[in-house]
Image 1 (cartoon, rainbow, N blue to C red):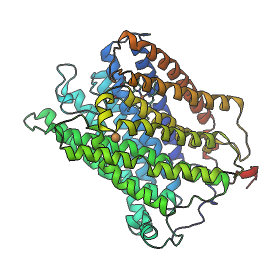
Image 2: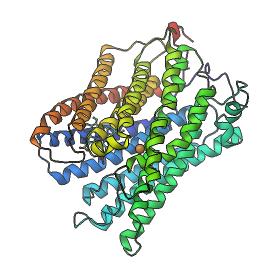
Image 3: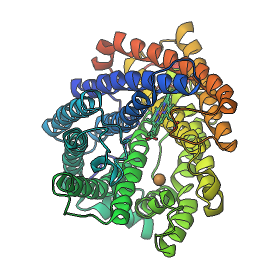
Length: 495
Ligand code: HEM
Ligand SMILES: [Cu+2]
């Protein structure tokens, strides 16, 4: 069965395929950040690109960011999961190839075909463009998403196959024998538990997403094939909600794997840990109606379910992860370096972003806040300062020249620029939301513009800091692939 001495097991260099994922993610991330900055500058009235270009960039930014979050999360999951189960490299690479193909289709749809119906492709917008874009452009966009989704579906099915081959079934991979029976200390490692959860929820989400995409592609050319708009909206938000959440559940594996290597303390999948992941496996599938709280046409029970489960699901994994990280680090003599710092700040970002989400998940608050910048405020907090910080932490971990290498001044300064810049950037969104500034508006009222200008400044800092992180990573790409054991950094002891 599983090798339960997993904490001390040194991690060797990254596979070139993992590095290819990270380089792709980094390139798209920087491009999408620059689009984000341009959107903010437009709202701040510092440039004038016009509404059409704004919505095109917004569409690309949303789709691109969600896509690379998935790619980077998958890279982290695959890198660590491979220690425990036998994954297929061909499928891993096929996903990357499909991703790049899908991105090319999406770029063509938006830049050549002027599609700008947002990454949520909400029905019936793609087919009712009022002459703004052609059915072909909409088809190219939805086709691109479909191609990307099929790649991820293949990857998750391979993870499912590998996990079942090793553990027999999902319930054992989720640690149910230890959760519901006696904890014999043989629960699967946290990485396996997380990967199993992600596989279950993402396969479900991707099948639903692909279904609605195919339905809408048919409707595009055969309008008589009418789709129930409420059904379409529910399916889209189910898919979107689960997919973006799963990116964090994949990326957090970096925390479970790297902090124990730094402190030589095991991250044990105890009963509380297992219970949290099992609970979230279910809850993440049932809370998507929190996106529909303003839709009076939805059955009330669904909205109540979204509200209640939204409250409940905010905490379990976040708390076991935050508490676990504190216990691992507390008096461990950990050497703080860029990787451990970024991972630690990512937990803060994740937790901080969950709070405004929790508030907005309250029906009465949602009526006032939902279409304001409060919403981009909360999700940029846990995606930028949480998810993306985890990815940068993983990049620094892989690129560390040797166990004892210290970070130089540029790295440390950039860490603070990224953290401070991100905080300022998300606070400008949140504050605007509190002042009722609408989201997804290209043109802002004069009284909103001061917040947009502050936000633009911080966005420029975040972009610059991210550029330095990426350049650093690229310059250490050879080190990242090099084969030396990455472990045992506590007290500066060598291997
Ligand atoms: C420098 C960093 C970033 C900047 C400057 C930026 C900027 C923006 C802006 C201005 C918007 C539109 C807000 C509005 O509704 O008026 C937006 C939306 C969005 N951003 Fe970002 N962003 C950044 C990073 C990220 C990251 C890291 C992610 C995800 C990993 C992300 C995902 C999204 C999504 C999903 C939307 C929603 C698009 C929509 O409403 O259709 N962003 N961003
Ligand atoms: Cu959601």
